[in-house]
Image (cartoon, rainbow, N blue to C red):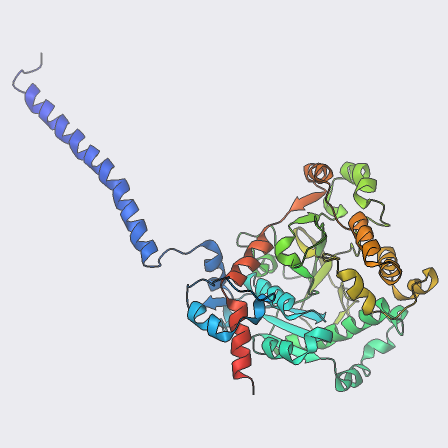
Length: 445
């Protein structure tokens, strides 16, 4: 039998216990909410993209956001007086020793400033520390080079007579592996030029203490899928030490409109490389995926590679690296890819045409272009009216059939990739582009 004198005491103890724990349960969420509010109010909260940038290449000394109410058609030419109050000062992290391994990109480009800045800053965010840019056309104009040269880690090499004389002495001209492209117009000339530039970039990379080198065009973005932090450095850190080169499979942009102006922030749909598709899907949907075009992809389909900087390294055309004294060990990565924004703008038809002085005949375009689609595009851009070009572009490039797109997404032929768009849009909204432009122009002699 329970002692009757102990029952009230026990009941009181139980009530006190319950009351204390109820009070704790009430106060705990409130305390968490209060702490969260204090940290956010003081700026202690940091979104993943900002942390991503701070951990790598881009440091923003002010958290203020850009005001986007400008009537200018070119967002990059904002007056400096509008930039400074909103963005404060921005700088790069010049301490590249924190990046391991050290990775660089070389590129031959004639692109405009906005495209190049988007390309550089995106790649800085994913872990690229140095850029060796061989510029010509729009990219070589003073207003562009003055900005590019102001960026830490960016080396600009204009195509001068002196450069051409130096490259004329290259041992590449005595090699047989590139001789098929010598003294050929358009594609051949570009391929040789890119290869010669890559050769020079290897020397620059060694002098800068780089560990790996990529050759990436300014209409391409590296996509380090399969890494925890979405970084190229993490991707390459996992490569075994006996591997000399890695190959990234390429995905090709599948534009859904004919009025794309800024592919990096407007295109999210990509056609996966057939090497990443199951055989049954590949064979079943191949014809439908080509949509009357000569090949599965509009342009190249053999991916791009990166090489470990070492003795006797040489380019092997624009897509691969090799070695003069040994056969390099090369591996294909399973998830990472290179995103190729090819013919993403309707204006690419005429811009590509204007860079090539060939006759729009079936016979002559074979001298000028290696790929059948490029040949057809050149003839259309040279012979059709604006309306005719647009119809051809819509029929052969634009994927605006939602039913078919959903089918391709279902079977894995298409994939949605949003990360580059989000990163570049976030950087643009921060005001970094306008800031580096105004700073370069103010400090220029």
